[in-house]
Image (cartoon, rainbow, N blue to C red; front, side):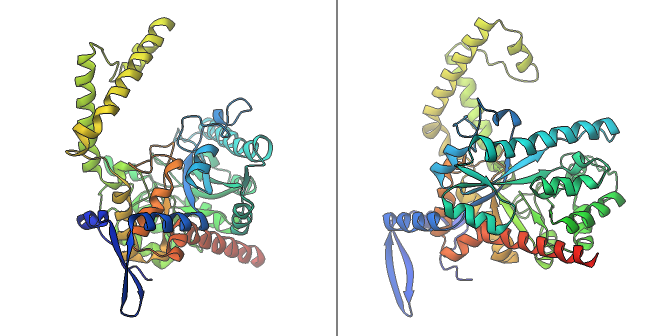
Length: 445
């Protein structure tokens, strides 16, 4: 690996210098202006395949009248992907954790199928000329080379599988290429990281059914996603799986101690397994202290401006109910006043907030990438956003700003080859290995 200019957060101010020193050959150093650096980064961004492993969806945004050919105001859609140069999006068939009952499993399964169908509708009926579904790494490269955007499907929370493991093969046939065994709440397969809140566990890691599910995922070629399950469950997954795993949207716990991030022992186990951690640009997972300080400062400014406007914000637990209780005319008026309030807040944030309580930004996000690269090696690190599921940092708050991540990586000295590995090469390598192992297992009979 050849990272010459890597800087951590305490040194990031150096990166604002108008001239950067770059190595040209033995004993030679040249200066690169900011404009030249940006131009070089744009060239890299255009040539590599940029892949985001976690973008949540709502099936209501995949209809003839409302769909991703339009800028819907969400964080990921085709106009934003095209503007920001995001080539590949893993759209997520997510279902929240419910009761471990036959009725609960049936409802969850129906919701999952609705999301699978939504992605197929976008790629096959609504916009096949602009986006296509990929099932393999070769598909990704072929579709990206054609100029289209690439859709892939991830499955968040195996709760929707129920207890019928044949659904795993069915999900794979529908295009699912990774799956997590739990989300926020213990599933029939695995404990969740949320057990750290109260110390209550259902399985003390994986259930017996969870171990069977891992074997079936290995058999059909679905990547195992270790984002969200409990620490014990994750460590047990490393013991059970025959194939490398991914963390589809997790960052480094050593830099930000939240249960959704991976600690160093987990990361070293992931390295040994041959997997990849897709660093997530979710502000509270990147720097919770900084994020909280910024949110509190913005909320205080919002309250102050609302008082100036003699306007009451319908917030708190009863806010939504109070809003729904308004007449149509009153609700319209309230929405207009809220829009005015947000506009006033936005106009004053830079002057009154940013200098004292800056938001979590792309540089903070790339600090996690740097840490992970230095700990487990660049070939085990990737990139994700968790857009439309809470993700986003200043500078990468939607797909239209994707270039800013590449720019920060180039600032820190990552080469074009390394940027390509981080954006997609490492994840696609794991997908290839998982699918090759599946073929071996199936050949074993």
